[in-house]
Image (cartoon, rainbow, N blue to C red; front, side, top):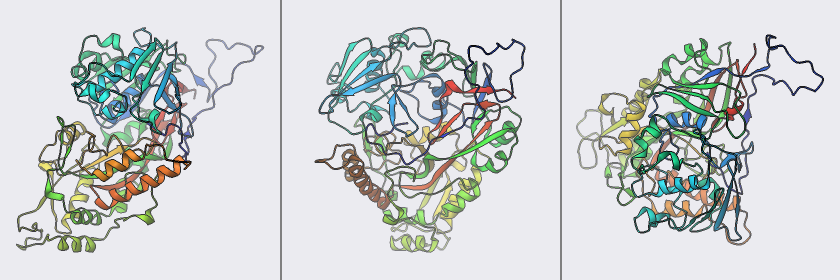
Length: 575
């Protein structure tokens, strides 16, 4: 997750969950315990293995530079780390490196820790960071993270094949690297790519070849507290403790990342087959009542949305092309939003874990605009019908569904993911809501898609994809770049707005004069949110409250608005 580099004012609280009291250090005159003496209840046990669950298959792209979704991020979090960590105030702090800026904030110097090793025993060096930036800027790179190196001077020229090196990167020595950026930005540390890649391990593989290589898919390495022991593609990753971890060995012997059938989550948690999991919201009522778990809920930096596809991503040009006029009339988009009773959806399918949202920032963000300043798109089917009438979408042939202004049949394909017990019912909720205002909506292809096919179809600009129910986990810093710029590959709804691009770029500039940076950024992002709220390229569905089920035998788990953390501290609690 990313947060503001220098100026973040946090309005969120981190919930640190210590499920058992840790025993303190022994004094010198305390008698030693015998090897066979039983641990007292609640004490930390060394060793043991826990199982971390997830309800969708993982792709197995175990490199931060190339992974695409939460499925692979869940595995990566145990095995790898970046330069930056975050404190309880959600501010960036040094992790694998410290940093300093020159006077005009155009040059940042990173000083790496000198006691960090890769899982194969090789030392982490500045060249591994340089290498990661080069991989992402490479002309053959097909991932979505160029925005995280684009600020480096010369990165764009290298990507375009106009330069053989990236001018702004200078390796000073094995543990020092200097980066010159194209212009100062208030959140550089949040945005610049933070994760190293093992140059020595990847050998001569190109950036294009790496995502499908054995080094990434079968035997990946990192610098984190656990290393990969075994991978069963799409089903399980077994991790074992990395004894040379720079903080010292983790307390657990290992972690198993296991994919489960989401509809069976409650039973698997009750039986102790899963120790830690972000619980399916539609089962939360029964899960939180289980006697063997500690339930935790926390407002999340995430939201779900319904994307409305307006074009495609031109990889050659490196930007969005809006060439799908089907939903170009914003009155239609507004009507589609008013037709949805989002609070009833949250209550019925997420056990109340969330509330309707109308902009791309949840209420836990310090930059979120107040609802009084925007259209809240309250559930109002009559208003939806009136908007469609006004836009010329009327039922001409009397079949109950509206034709477009030219009298042609107007249908809407809707895509949603499988995986939860209520997935089908959720999709039908949206489809029927639109049908009730005269929009002929249907499930694309007649069936739900699994996680990977769902996002593959969207990213590939499958022409049958028109609307889709997705979700985003956000960084703590409100900068929308990476998702909302017209040059962003993850601009899934393919919306291009020069005004939006200009505001996004303005939001990371230093203000003129002595204006407070936070206040300046709030003003810029308020203007941007008003624009997005009015244009509505996306129907913002609901901001989420995450629910975690943590077995009482597991301690040291830290739960944050971004997920779980401090994996090296996780441990088994004596019963």
